[in-house]
Image (cartoon, rainbow, N blue to C red; front, top):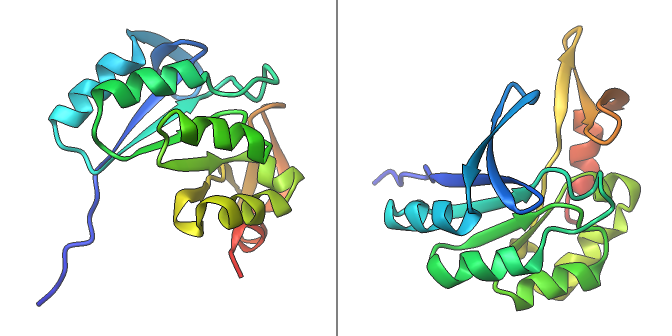
Length: 165
């Protein structure tokens, strides 16, 4: 019997403390409080909620642990959090607030050992590497959201770097 491997992941994109909608990564519309959106996603029985603070690393900050706690209070769905996490201690605080998984984006490119450290602490099933890329002349190249530029670093190389061995 074939197993259905499809999963529905609800994404809540936040900018500081407000949930927003992104249109083409250039226009952002306010949606409201992240915990309200998470409550709806939980009621709709999504398989997972991804909570991302899109400007945290640009602001040299980490996704607000209070927002994580507020989402956990109303949402029973597994929660993955992302935004500015570049140290194990930051991830540990978010897990203590109720995050089930930690998602790392640009930090693992600057510090490849971070994924391994997080995997050792929380288990590899609780760590996600996210990679932003753009297609340029049939090449998948890494997009640096801090500088809003395309790097010469290829997607396949970033994926190999993120691979747990």
